[in-house]
Length: 377
Figure 1 (tube, rainbow, N blue to C red):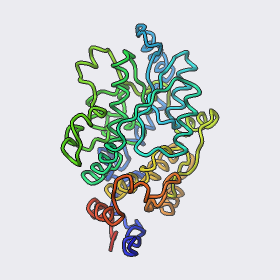
Figure 2: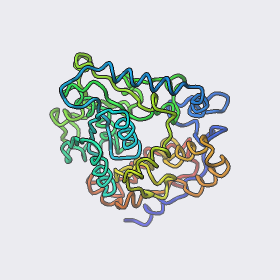
Figure 3: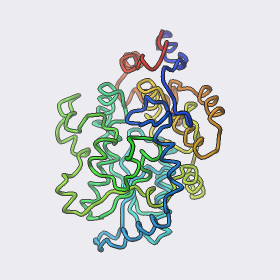
Figure 4: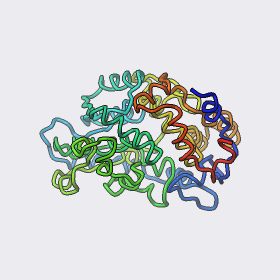
């Protein structure tokens, strides 16, 4: 690697030209996040959690489950999972209610050793189905996502939302339970945090597709129409006829608490380890070695990395003061992911057939200079 490239990547990420929530650390540059009198929508939603009748919500969940007719699959619902803290807690919560979930794993872009262990661990508690698309095609999609919209994880986002619904319609399993409503936990447009059901419209708006459809990839980097079938969702008509619904379990069994989920998962055997120095939590995003570059690019585009939302959640829950959290964020910063979950960046780039010099060009192109002051000088 050229020394200049390395120095450029290691430059301090300070000099923010943005406003932050007056209660947490979330910047107003986060896409789709509303602010009211300087307070982000995630903090507003957090305040409203204590007003919710959670016993009533749990009863609503029971009613939702009881109204489903036997489907012949032997399963009551599907829980999409990467073996992480949230899906582990979801599975165990549902089992404690007498529900039989089928775990559906859309194979991640570049599975880590710790991610593999945690997937295997969760399989001790419930039946698991893992869907693995052609990995050579996946690498091309990673490259396209990174170079077209600055998100190496684009195909993973698509698979996370489309694979479980495909299995649900194929097997006739009527319910798919995702975890938290992201707009309630991390912010979004006002009112979006109220949604209990994940609709196809929600997926198109908030699923991380960044304006790209699976069909847009056909013809690029040798990707063929048949290659994208693994990433295509069933039609609305097929979903309707199958009677399949997707819901946020966190809107019924709440309030959502990431640390509570982590404690349950660790007690159940999940392995944790800080994946990188740019993370605050040691119990999140452990399965995909490409996540480090995803988070780094997120910081360059929007001015915040993984530690910012993690620290903000802890601020809302009274686990750290805003001032102390800011000090931690300054120390953590957003460092170039030379390693993530034990995997060197060279291995990630080799998967994409990309060099560090080529990555530098991509980084420069997606760096938002209106937000980041002095980066790359």
